[in-house]
Length: 348
Image (cartoon, rainbow, N blue to C red):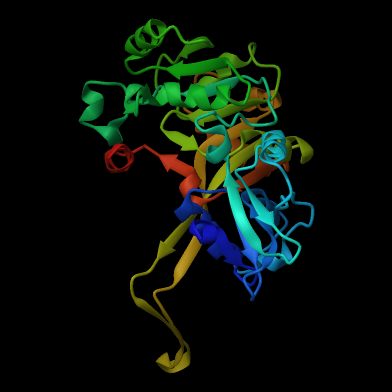
């Protein structure tokens, strides 16, 4: 069964499930029991909700499974399965018989071929892209091209970010520029992109949030902010839903980062007595991905024409007991192109 690689045992941990999803580049797994029979489905959304509700990564997936997932039966026609998959944007659909045996799995590509899987929930919100940096960590490439125009496949970084937000329904972009601003504007103008692009220019480097003061009179709704050198493979509407439901003023998108210590580690006590050892332990952290959702209310907290990072803004809100949330994505759902090494890995 070629689809068996999408199976995961119900006793597995959340951490193992996330790693499996990253390895397979999937957002959905089929949960099986000890007899290899169908037990349920596990989505990245289930995992994200579990993390937000305080479950540790060591918790078993059995504790977070839902019972309302849709599956197909052998008697269902291909046309009926197609309609269901299209209506819920299912990555794949398992076909399960009355004995809970998984007889087949229908993948999106099997039915829709190259048709783009447009996200189900759309939103039309302004998107701010911070593209004013010097790109010093990507030199010598940025000696010639500004970092936002470095190619990713057949698009520039900026175009790829535009495309991903446009798939969710947004086509109004505010681009913060400084270094080689004229080249960025000229290039994008020549592409005749089907978006509305507004450029706002720093007179001097203002950090990752300092230039936002230039938008105080332009933004009056919830808006996304993204660095120009990161991509997030996630349904952005899910993040937006979390942001609104929790009435956050800022939501950070975090990426899980697993760091393995390539040695056995020791824990010692009084007089150097060994208390425990762990062989090549793995530590998991949530790191700042470089994408955010902000409410327009926070713009008044950005000083005028001063160097100000978005972390400064976040710390300011926290000190005032205002709501700042964190929405997690898996490690490989975050694509960082901020250094020459990272960029070369992506294009290789």
